[in-house]
Amino acid sequence: MSKMADEKVMGAPASGGGGEDAGELSPAEARVRPLETLLRAAPLGLCVAAMAVMLRDTQTNEYGTVSYSDLGGFKYLVYANGLCAAYSLVSAFYTAVPRPATLSRSWIVFLLDQVFTYLILAAGAASAELLYLAYNGDKEVTWSEACGVFGGFCRQAKTSVAITFGSVLCYIVLSLISSYRLFSAYDAPVPSHGNKGVEIAAFPR
Amino acid sequence: MSKMADEKVMGAPASGGGGEDAGELSPAEARVRPLETLLRAAPLGLCVAAMAVMLRDTQTNEYGTVSYSDLGGFKYLVYANGLCAAYSLVSAFYTAVPRPATLSRSWIVFLLDQVFTYLILAAGAASAELLYLAYNGDKEVTWSEACGVFGGFCRQAKTSVAITFGSVLCYIVLSLISSYRLFSAYDAPVPSHGNKGVEIAAFPR
Image (tube, rainbow over all chains, first blue to last red; front, side, top):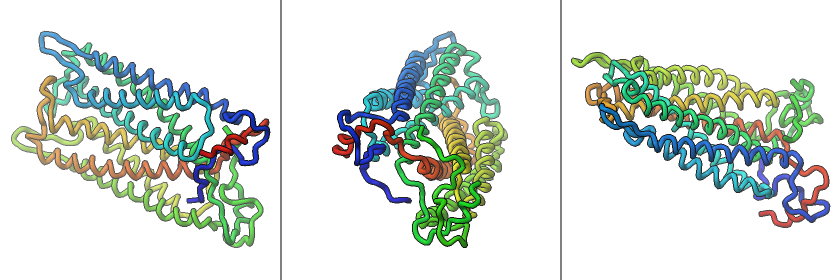
């Protein structure tokens, strides 16, 4: 696309001023950073909570015992929440320390944010489908309503899935922030040679 | 974040040159546009194919009849594919016509791309979970392996889900393109007053 300034320190022109504080950030950046750190720390709590609720989700009654590990979708939810909790921990620490954003760092954070957003959303969607089946069953394929028998198990699983969707929301906002940070470092595509943009400028809407 | 030039025509400086062709695009933009149009048209075909395969997915044998509409997750897949096909059609036409990108247009395309990416990914994940259950069943909650009896139905559903994941990939790339287009119009956050960025510039990595 447009040419990229490789490894350029974003938001730090080479001709600086005083020169005492290397970690000095722009006012806009200073306002966004605590918010971003908070947003990165929030999924840590949410993912750990969702994981803990799901891991302890076992019910035994006269019909038998059911545990989260009996259902593939819930196991995937636990793994996804574990991975996201680890990523949140690392990235919250990373964001908390003020440091100039380089292009390569922004790319790494951006790509990881994208991957984890899709990962946790897919886990949440699969688990929600599983929960829907557990509550409603499916007569045509002779699947029973498991929640009629294992009500407590289903309620706890529902809590875990709901918490997971909370962290999905955090991750969606985080991907927006990291894509803003990455792509705002690039120039908008500018007509370079043979620029005939007068009519464009004449109709700005 | 940084200040935004509202309704600014991106990539078209106000002081233009010749002034014959209003739709003149930058070389980078001209290279990306056919690729983007293709990427926007591809999910149209994929979504229609996935929808058609799923809609005709019915099997009758001595055990009874099973149809996609008996399974909530597959119905959601059909709806999601239908919505995405409609969006792809509109956005492919929109992209095919060369026009200067304004900030508000970029925001709309960006937000819609995000919404549809998450929508189709969630539908794909939920259907994949459903398919997994249909193939493997779940002894603990007494769900039978429906695919042992309705093999043809499951194979056709698997095809539809696989095609859906093809369009998920297209949408992920499209979200990247539209977020690049949107956020590259913004300036990188620049230290504005009391700039003390000399050390930053001295350690560019």
